[in-house]
Structure formats: structure tokens, C-alpha cells
Length: 287
Image 1 (cartoon, rainbow, N blue to C red):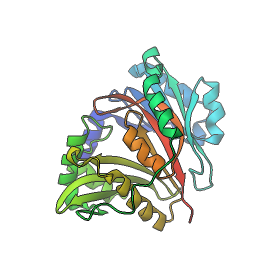
Image 2: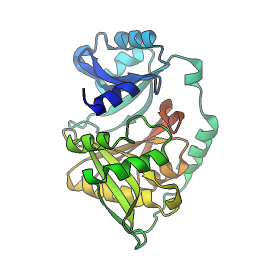
Image 3: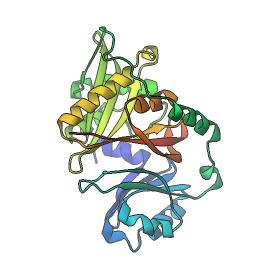
């Protein structure tokens, strides 16, 4: 077992459940069904429920194709969000959730009011390019130590060990993540990443981290510009993000880029030291 696998194991577990793949642990106190396999249709919800009961988890969330939705609805799951044209056959994906405690089921009313205001505003552009002092480009393995330090400064906690340079290098080497950066002269001051699915041509736009002293320069907006250009050149067709409900600025960045809001994953993810609700946005790229 290498250092990164050990680090992942301390935080959460990624393993097979039947033919499907789940990510679970006490860090976010939940099970996340990452990859559903149709061969598990007859007993997947039973297995998820049993695992949650054994471990004492308070939420189960499942990312599933449309054909599997009736199976989860029958077991008491509810739809929280969706992404159209997620798979290569243009099939949609649904986020189905089951809450196993009253606290986990609670609705974040105040934050939702703020979100409603954001969604009612007219999207706006932030200019064609950042100030001359800032340069944007792709990040490589040699940048991993700097990246880890930025993630550590920005996030009190995070679902994956992004504060470990070894983890960053591993995700670069296996091709699962493309990292982007912005520099002030020679200083790296902001990061973002795209978790890519080359087979289905979709990508999650994630890991936006800008040093506190550099906020207000719209750097996340320009990072997202660069990410979209890179992925469009690679013929990706569906881009999406799972953004913190409690981060209006990040939500506004995606709204201004033409992403469509499709739902809230309530009390879903441990990030910045607490369990937070997350918003799902998507965008279909025209080739």
C-alpha cells in the first residue's frame, strides 16, 4: 500500500459493493455510490442500507443513470439533482439521496434564500482577461508542493488529501485530473482542476482555491475560462460542478459562465471544517 492509498484509507474508503463502486467513511458520515452497475439492480439498495446501518452513516447519495432511478425511488430515495447528457450515449445522471437522521435532513433555509436571489440575477461578464500581472497556465508535477500549500491555506478540511503533494502527483500521472493555475509574477496564487471522464466526455470543474489576499480579482472566473477552452479542444461535451451552497461568489462564477442550476445536495460534504450543502450546475459544450 503506497502513501496515497494509506492517506485515502484514513479519510474514507473506496471499494466495490457487488459490481458497483462506493465511497464511504466517517469524514462526511455518508455513503456515495460513485459508479452503479446494472448487474446490481436487484439488491443494490439493500446493500447500501445494510452498510449505512453497520457504520452508523446518516446519508446515502447515489449517482445513477436514468434507468436505475425507479429502483431507488422504490426504496425511499429522493432526487436532489441531475445532469443531462452525462454519458456517452447522451443518457442523463441523477443524484438520489436517502437521509438517515433528522439533523441530516434539515433544510438550510437562509442559504437557499441567498441562492434564490443569485439565480434571479442577470448573468454578467467579468471582462475578457485578467490584469497583466496575472498569468494562467497548466500545472505540472513540479508545482505539487506549492499547490498543496495553497489547498492547506484555503480549506480547513477537504474530501480528498489535496494537501499532500504525492496525492496531487498521482492524480496527474493517472490522467484523472487536469490542474490549472494562475500566477502573480512567479508566485502561484490560485488553482482549479478538472476531474475528467475521457470515455463519457464529461468533466467536473472543481478544487477552486485562491489565496485570501488575491480574492476580488475574479481569478476563479478566468481559471474557469481556461478550463473550458482546454476541455472544448479535447471534445468534452458536458461540464459540471458541485459548488458549496455557502459560497455565493463561487456560485456566481458558474452562473456568469452560463451553467444551469439543477439542485441542492443537502448536508452532503465535509469541507472547510463542517458538513455543507452543495449545489449542482452543468453546461453542455457546443462543438
